[in-house]
Image (cartoon, rainbow, N blue to C red; front, side, top):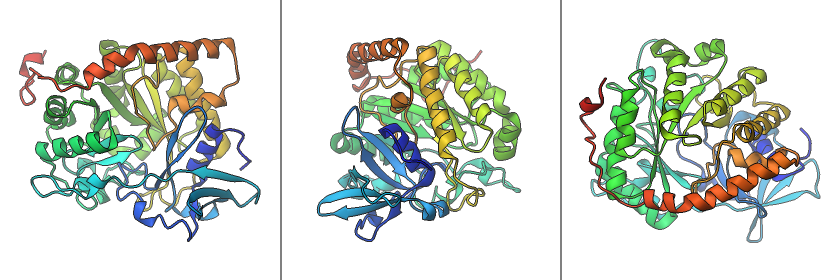
Length: 414
């Protein structure tokens, strides 16, 4: 590890090596109670006082964190991250408090923190039963994932529509969320079918941007149905570009539908909805770096933006004893994210108040790329587009009547 030179590099280093908790910090009660589909289980912090505020879910529980040079401590009223390699280096951090709505209950008696959770600045909600790949024998769940030891334990398995709506309304009123992200594992009857009623209810009764992250379908007409119900964003988690690593680490996905189903679905919705509206999600740090770079280029070439998760060997996952990725490799990966978005003119960071704490957001990587006139032009265009798109996003965040049927997609079938 080497000392960071800018906030982007510091963010990546925190993901790669984690952070130890000094007794003075006293933040144990703020640690995330759930692991959100096997990607994050740490402490949400905010850094950055210049270009933007960066929300980071920093690893603090995993085994590799014991070797981290970083230590969170509290000095007076301030949280400080100390670098034990250099006693003169200190970084200020903000630790967001848990929202009060976490302790409220829905009308059915469910604790709202067991329905949805803040992930940075947006609301994440898992819908449906435990992923089917956790329930078969032998288990075929993704080897980096801990959803099967989370859903039904740290959060409720059954979430009625009213539970989700009431939780989202509280999160909108108190936390100012603009985006609700619905994710799920493999479901009996299909992931899109599982998400559909929640999408319609959020659009009609809450008023927010809605994203859906479920397993893909070969019936591409179903995406037309979800778009009519109000989906603003689809995320396709195909995890690994290298087919051998995909089959090795995602045996259930490989057997049930394979990589090509992800690719065709992602390409379809991108053409249907437009450039930059959807994302391809991959994990960096397990497959060879060159395959991850190829994935990033493919995703932006398809008109989507890359959501790259730095591999985290979570406690309870099959891969919990794997090492954390190399910092230098992850810098190269995140640099490619920005470069590929710039090359293919992918508009990123346009939607208001969406900062994801589990990843390095594409626009977070700006500082990793040296100045050029192309970069200046891309950033100028991106800022103009964000300004011009704001009224459109405001209209999408208003409650509205949805005419599509959330339970009967038959008229879309072809």
